[in-house]
Image (cartoon, rainbow, N blue to C red):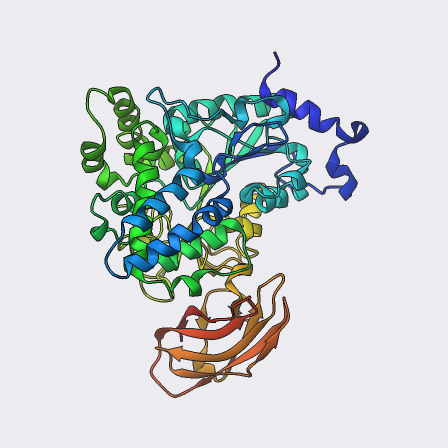
Length: 572
């Protein structure tokens, strides 16, 4: 039997009467430096895509229909919520647990590690079940990373040279990395390309790092790590807490993550802020703890997401040393191997001539816990931005402090890769596929290797703001570049833009905090993509200064509620 990639490549290449699908879209002009290149995307856990009933009319993702489950149990949830107001949580907890069972049931595993339902990983399934070659991108548009990020690269490189590696994340990072190594060899053989560029997201960054740690990297010339989960997330520490009264759940952050992961224009965050926190904590505890603690008993992949500083305590709480000996061996390999040696792994890769870059996110607190500069899922200490890893390359002493973010919260001069780490504010955990600001940056890095550093192209400053349709508005400098306001030269003009692709936005006001100026914007309605000028008038205060500009607006949602977009700047 021919290898999976070979069979898939042959089928997609000969589709539509023998002509590649992307030929219908006009000729592709391949950038210089990418003529002999194939690009492979290694997505995170959510987008690795386990499928049920693959190839049948009933094909569906590994999770159930959450909307149908909520509808079925809505009456009981409402009744339980009313009782919870008076301190009785039993009815609500039971209904919430039933919703979790119906929605995430396919994730439950048997003691041997197999699923209770017939799940097939895409990479191991039938030939027609892979997302490997992306000629038919419209057929899998529901997959976030593939829908826009991979398609953007394919438009410039040709779809036959772009591949998405899908895997069973439950097996653990070591096992998945072994399959990635075999997959990359197939890609080179089938595509005929001698060089590879890799782009990982979240857990996929761990997989790539493990691949390098195990001696891989032959033919790899460039790697972009997007929202790397190199040291795990503190999320598990809080949502697997046995005592529901100790569960800390950030409802607004969870709504923000859900909105952007799902690619919705309806922003749930302002609605989530209206919910009683104590009741939400109980629901979150009932659903997430039931789901996660069951998976922790058998899924090595979940343990690779656990924060390194929590690993020993979590392992002692959930795993029996004898019954889970094999699982512990696999999770130890991840935590004491790749997750503890990221600086050395990247330094070794760069020593071999592999160019590496990091894209981090900030601006949303963790969904649970007290992580700072988080992106809703991975706290800053788990990646290369914000608090940063304790080891790695540093900026020269004479440049220390130059790479401080506009809000003054952290200094990237002590980051793992100080001159190759971008931070995207307002983006949620690797959500570049829906962000018009960072998507072309990642494509440029993969295909051209430029900008080589964060100082090389003013269109991509080290600290960028996401342009996500769910955000409603963005605030742009007239000529791009670093977010520095030249207030000493007099009045400065910025642009408020409606980033929504479908909805109108009513701009209400603009306020300044911490900067020696006042903002003037004309309230009004903006169509999708429309802009409005914003004037900054100096007030004579001292400079330099750090602060933020807050745009208050209302998006034309079914229930219009005021939103606020805060953008940090430094004044000179």
